[in-house]
Length: 113
Figure 1 (cartoon, rainbow, N blue to C red):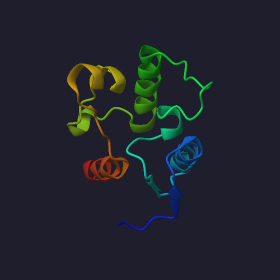
Figure 2 (cartoon, rainbow, N blue to C red):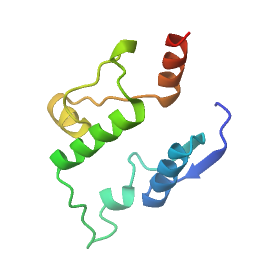
Figure 3 (tube, rainbow, N blue to C red):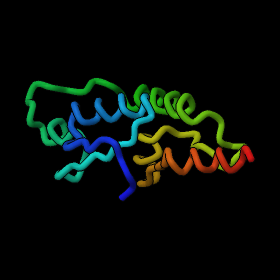
Figure 4 (cartoon, one colour):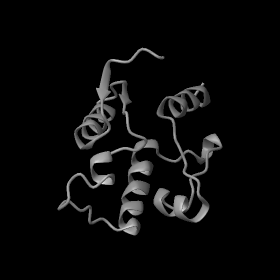
């Protein structure tokens, strides 16, 4: 395992929020979760009155905008982004795309030399 500054125990709402803040600050972290999904409290309906009211279309648009903001245009490095957002991509193809922040950083660094 690489050297990390923070270990986040649990991929629930607090763990994911912490991860987002650490990512924004460029602090390395690892999330460990005992369940097979993130935000398992919502997924397993532990909160019977809590609903996430974001439509897939809306959520996909937000995720695509965030992806562009974080990574920029990667096409000059040979990495093309899907035209579909991750939620639609998963529902249509059964696949999901994964972008490794560290790998993207190394690709950009190597290309700038």
